[in-house]
Length: 153
Image 1 (cartoon, helix red, strand yellow):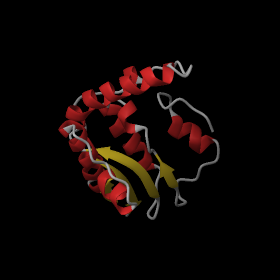
Image 2 (cartoon, rainbow, N blue to C red):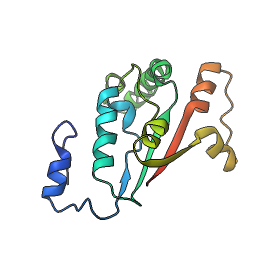
Image 3 (cartoon, helix red, strand yellow):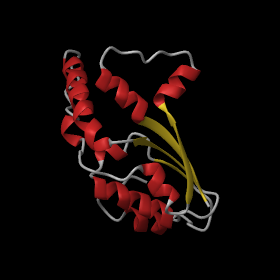
Image 4 (cartoon, one colour):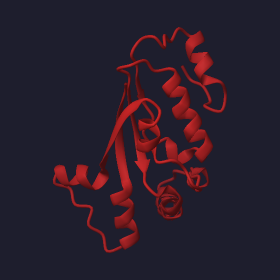
């Protein structure tokens, strides 16, 4: 079902036959940095309300997001410039939202989930991929970015 998350997607989902009494699996990977902080919380609140015990969620967490988003926006500008050289003319840099936001793991754990994160640095190292960089800001961002798995308790 396609729907704009700015609309009442939770109601539309249940009207389409979604049963919140059944366990569900949710994926919000690659989404949260594109939401304003209050919309991130609202999304997680809706997912919590729609999830029964045993439901699962996969998403990401960027610790200290308010500090990292400007650097990530700069990196996205660089990527968009490279994409344009190949005819891809989509600018996603204005879609990043800075500002203080809740730590996703802490938020989920305080709202009835058992959530944990694995850093990108850990995941890449486990697969023999180096994320070595001479840019300390970029290295800090890799250390703070984690993939989150959560189970509704």
